[in-house]
Length: 165
Image 1 (cartoon, one colour):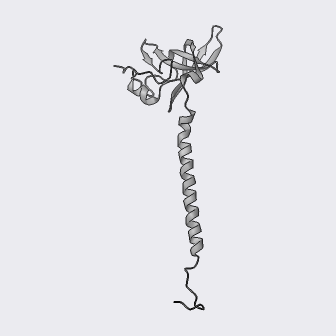
Image 2 (image 1 turned 120 degrees about the vertical axis):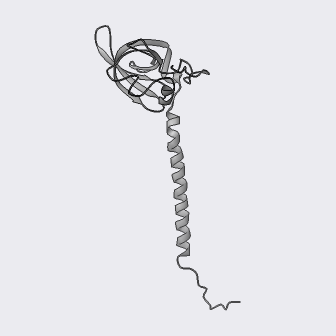
Image 3 (image 1 turned 120 degrees about the horizontal axis):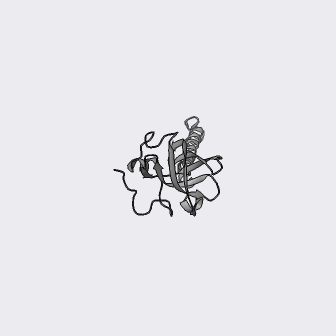
C-alpha cells in the first residue's frame, strides 16, 4: 500500500498526447470523407440522354471541325456550320467515351482532325440551339462511323457498337 503523502510519477503531457492522437484521427476521417465525395462528383454530374437531348429533334449537319476533345466521360467535337444565309454557328457534339471510340475504329488525331469537313447525324439538346448528341459521322471519303449511342437511355442498348474492320 502507498502512503498518502507519496506522489505517483505520471508521464508528463500524457493528456496532451492523447488529445493530439484524437485530433489526428478526426482529421483523417474528414479527409477520407472529403476524398470519397470528390471521387463521386463525376458520377453525379453524368446525365441520361433524355435529360439533355430531345429524341424528337434529329438533325443532320455538315461543317468544318474546329475542335476535338478526347475526354471522359464523353468525347466532344465542334463544327462550324453555315446556315442557308451563310451565317456560321459553332456546334458542339457529344459522343462516346474515348475508349469506346478506340474499340470501334476511331484513332485520336487520325480519324478526324481540325479542318476536316464532316456530316453529323445527331439529336439536338433541349436547351441549347447549338448542342447535340452525335450518332454518326460521315467523312468526305464516304466512310461512316458511329460516334455516340442510339437514342434512348444513352448506354447503347444491349448490343455493343460494331467494331470497324
